[in-house]
Length: 316
Picture 1: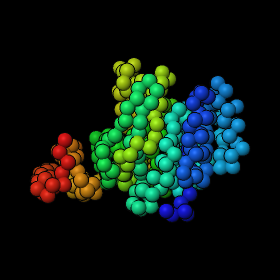
Picture 2 (picture 1 turned 30 degrees about the horizontal axis):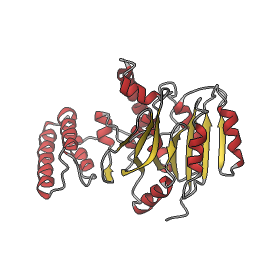
Picture 3 (picture 1 turned 90 degrees about the horizontal axis):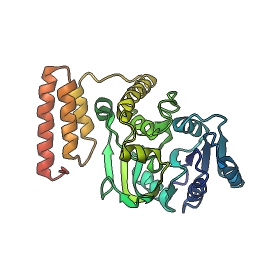
């Protein structure tokens, strides 16, 4: 393992006084220690600040107490600006890391030096108890700029399972649209990393404990469907986010979309049928050149058949 890689853990907290000690201890008690743990409290109205202050005795802990509540994205922004790590790990204050999480992740980053963005499976606990795995094996998910830009593909997982290299995250954080992402700011991390060209990987081992409780806003919005307009509003927030990241990185739309789409697909060693369908739709709908639209579809179908015959295709 490369001991020269510096690691930062960013814990964001708002009114989770009853949970935040467990989160902090889970970051402190890793089999391989974080170089720094940065706790950002978003102007909590409970006794979170008092509890967090007790942890300043640990030399690798930094505390940021915000004077005004500005939401989760604001906490990500401030935490990142204070961080000095080469790899940044994110942890919500109501979740818990398994003791070997950091060691496993660092081993993966060392083994796959091309990995820019890593997420893992997780276990739900509390009101709901189950294991969530995107797949039963580790995955190289390749690049996803085109797929994200044209179809809003969301390739990642909940905040506490995410980590990424500093050179990737600095391309989109800090983000000024803090009012749009007071909650569910992991969207900014997942979409942002894709848009700036992160090569993504997935670890199938559940290394994070995701707490389900009555105040868990992401889980409750997703599964209880509290707001009918939530996804509609999220669509416009996504557009604004994409525009900001594209402008910040001087990114322009590719001239030969069909060609670029096929090359992006080829960065995924074991594509799924749904991947081919996604790129087929993108080429059909958004390629302006009729010649390249036709040629791109033919090349995509040919690549699909070659993967199928070689047994590399994952059919769902």
